[in-house]
Each structure stands twice: as C-alpha cells, then as structure tokens.
Image (cartoon, rainbow, N blue to C red):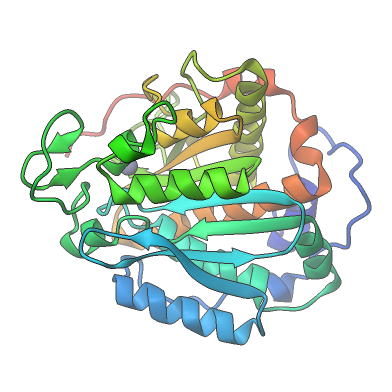
Length: 334
Ligand SMILES: [Zn+2]
C-alpha cells in the first residue's frame, strides 16, 4: 500500500518492503490531484452541498449523493458514496462542528476517487463501496460549536441549553428510541444498514509536542473499550498502524497515540463493539499556513485506508506495532 502511493507522491520509502499484494494497477499521479479550491477549509453546509453536487455531476454517476437523516434544524446529514464493491468503508467527518478539516479532506477524496477514470479506479471501485458522512454536525458547523443544536439538551455529555456531544451518543447498547441525538442515531442506523468493515472518524485536537520535541500534527486511536471483541480491536490496531505509516511517510505528519477514554458511546469504541475495524483520527489545530498540509494528511489517510482495504495489505499489518505509536506529549502553551 505504501509503495503504491510513495511512487506518485515522490516520497522516499522507509521501512521494510511491502508484502506482495494482489495485482493492482498503480494509480497515475495526474489522477490523484484534486482541485485545491473545491471548498474552503471551514466550509458552510451550503458550500459542502454545492461541492458535492459538482463532484457528483463531474463523476458521471460514480459519486452518489444522499442523506442519512436530518439535524434538529432540518439540515441534511449528507452522505456521499463511491464504488460498488463488496467491502464497505465508512468515513465520518466533523461530528464536532468546530473541528472542520476532515470535511475538505473528504471532498478532495471524493473528487479523486470519483471523477478521474483509470484502470486503478475501476479496480478500486469494483472492490470497495466507500460511504462518507460529510460534515455530520451541520448545525454545530454553522455555529462553530462542538455540540449539535438542541436548546432542550440536558444531562451527561450535553451543554445544557446548547446541545449534545454527538460523539458520546453512538452507544450500540442504548435502544435507538432512547437516543436523543439525531446525528448519532443516523450514523448508527446507517452502520446497521450496511455493516461496514472499516469506520474512520475524523476530528481535531489542540496543539501538543511529540516526545522528541517536534510538534504533533495528528493523533490516532483504535477501540479501547473492554466491550470490543479481540478480533475487532486487532483489526482496529492494524488500521491504526497503516494510517500511522501513510500519514507519517506520505504526508509528513508527526503522529502520536490519542489518549482517549473507554466509553462505548464514543464512535471509535462503539463501532469496534459492533465489529468494525475502527479508528479515530485527530488533526491538530495548527496555524493557517499549515492547514493545507493538515487537510492533505486526512486525505492521505482516506486514500491509504481504501487502498489497503482493496488490496488486502491492511490485514497483513502487524497489529502489535500499534504499541510503538508514541504517546501524545505535553500541551503547547498558548
Ligand atoms: Zn472531536
């Protein structure tokens, strides 16, 4: 997997040679460059909708658009799908409305996967069906707030009078009728409808130092709840190692392990409990001049996960290598 993308991104290969994969046509460099200005780095729901519509038109039907539900203010919870293969992937961006950068990365990935036509595209899209919930919290996005919009919100994992933290309401053990958060209900219901083998959830964090003193640009974590089965956790760890390598060697990211909790209502944990290989990706909130590189890192994560799932290399990764991802270091002073 790394080898395929290293060639086109002109990155020197580090580490051991990749395991021999199923024969796959290599992607051509010209087909993996998305237009840089499909959306701004913090797009409004309307800008997301316009960009997705343009991509769907340009893709000649290969990118299909829909909605998995509606927010409390009636905004569509946008779903974009590319590919018709048997292996299903689910990416989710911007559950927290003030953590936007996964959304422009998803727009770029949809363009790159859906618009050009090549032997590699036909190969990839015959193996995978990739669903992306683009900007899962549109009401929070328009307010630049973490929570969804719900003035009646109260109780645990809410900001009373403001809204709920969507990423605490994916608990698969809670009856869906008792779940007060439409965005979480919609993602859970979509998971149950299509049962993706891989779920990746894109967020943003503050600023931290690596153990070696460089600045962290991203942190990742697999399911840590004891309710997740050993097999799902192992596959989540393989996904983490694969993303660590791709983001480090192909996107120049400085990646650590995210110090996340064990609560099963967190998407990373919930979809592990349900049996998916599940991963959280947290992009650091860096200064404006580094934002394009941050979007690029999430884009590389999305494509590398797809490539590894399509050629099977993802499942030949040593899950124990996840323990070598360094722990996140101290917070940077403001
Ligand atoms: Zn978040």
